Structures are given as C-alpha cells and as structure tokens.
Amino acid sequence: MLRWKELYEECVNCHKCKLGDNRTNMVFGDGNPGGKIMFIGEAPGADEDRTGLPFVGRAGQLLTRTLESIGLYRKNDYYICNICKCRPENNRTPYTQEEEACIPYLRNQVALVKPKIIVCLGATAMNCILGKDWRITRDRGKWVERKGFYMTATFHPSAILRDENKKAPFWEDLKDIKKKYDDFRNQNVDS
Image (cartoon, rainbow, N blue to C red; front, side, top):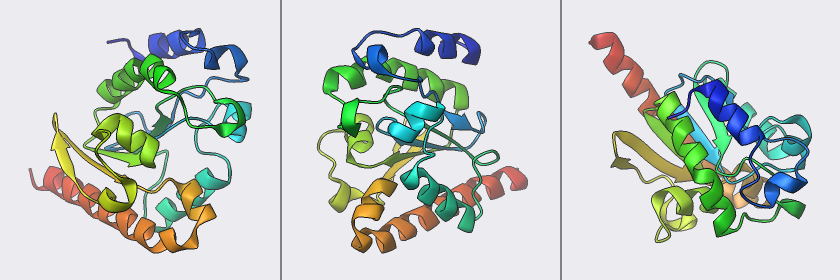
C-alpha cells in the first residue's frame, strides 16, 4: 500500500489507459482523509477536469448542499473521489478497462481512509464496487457489510438534476447514511 503522497504521484503520472493522455488534471479526491464516510462516483466531469477536484460542478454542488443540510461536511466528515481519476471524453461512462486500470488506486485510497461507510454514487460506481447484479433503482438504499465496511448506493446527483422524481429517494438515502454515521459516532463516544 502506498502512502498518500506516493499514491498521488503515481496517479498524476499514470497512463495505463488513454484517459491519462487527454486529461487537463488528474482528479484524485478531496475531503477528510480520515473521514468515516467515503463517497465514490464514476469519473470526473469537465469542471472536475478543469479544477482537479471531485464533485465541484452542478451535480457536486447539489450533493454538497444536500449533505450540508443534514450536517455532513466535506472537510470534516467524509472523503469523496471517483473510480476513474481522469475524465472520459464528453463525460461518457468509463469503459471496463479504464475502471480496471484505476481500481487499484481506489482500493489504496479506501485502505488509507479506512471509512466505516462507503457510498456508491450512481450505477457505474455501484456495479464496479458492489457487483453487476445490483440495479440502482431497485437496490439503492440497501446496506451490505463487506470486509468491515458498510456499503450502500444511491443515485448520482447528476441523475437528480435530470429527473426530479429521484430527489425524494435520494434525500431519504442520504438521511439514512447520516443516521448510520451518527450511530458509529455514538458507539465511539460510548466506548
């Protein structure tokens, strides 16, 4: 396992797939590197590629505002990143070989953060992490425990921008994630 600086340097210099050849910036991750929640999306978009930070475009701003409204803050409570560290052209879904090239970096990030809760944002992240048999509409909000992590999935915030009908279930999922997070914090206070 690489430490943060080494991992970052490896990602910056990565050209295991064509995404590394066409990026403006590698988008590593942001937030609290000791956060108990880790949000994982699929890949950076145009705003993320331009700034080098994950979830800063319209969808990211929606996610940030929604999380802050329930008392979860990026710098304090969670770490956020993507499976792929470079933007696919035209914001397309990453190809399997691109995900496979980046997944070791994500695993290293998970090992460094040591979150209690992993939240997959959208179908691509969910299928890559939880398995291809999961369906976002059917399985979002369900919890599974694997390897000491509590994992769930919810809609990607960009889906909420496209379909208002997903807003209420997304909101319920985030409140449930906050409850699970509070349960962990209360256990630590009681021990």
